[in-house]
Length: 198
Picture 1 (cartoon, rainbow, N blue to C red):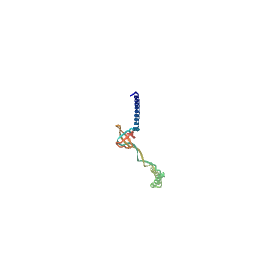
Picture 2: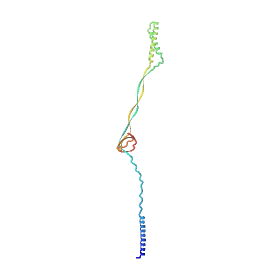
Picture 3: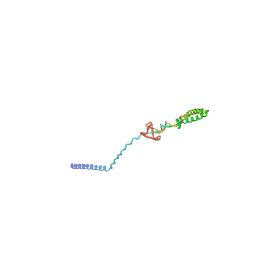
């Protein structure tokens, strides 16, 4: 084989090699283009999980009582003695009646006219004085009993129910709270608990 033929063969072989590489590369590219492209994995936005609400467990419930002071009135009838002055419309009536009566009695006692006159005068004077004393005794203040109502205010303490004593456990500790309504035993209460500390 001549040198020239060898050169031609080498050139032809090199050209064939280049052609084969080009064809192989083209086939590989086509094959890659024909394979399905995997779909992109969707990214799901994760919402943050809320922190659990702390809760306590109810272990007992009973009525809660408070002592309050309540006023009350105590009334009673009280007797009072009242003196009223007796006013006479004729203040000299006793003396006049006594004088006339004494004069008549004296006149009946006396013997002769002169004695009757003296006895009548003396009887009238004594009768007038006696009648005046009787009139004064009638005019004395008279006692009367009058009743009036007297009241006094006192205070008493009594117990009234104001809500419920709720005993609960939270993190191993037992606590008591006063609540307006009664929860069920065994139920849970969200913290912070609305109520007043017992």
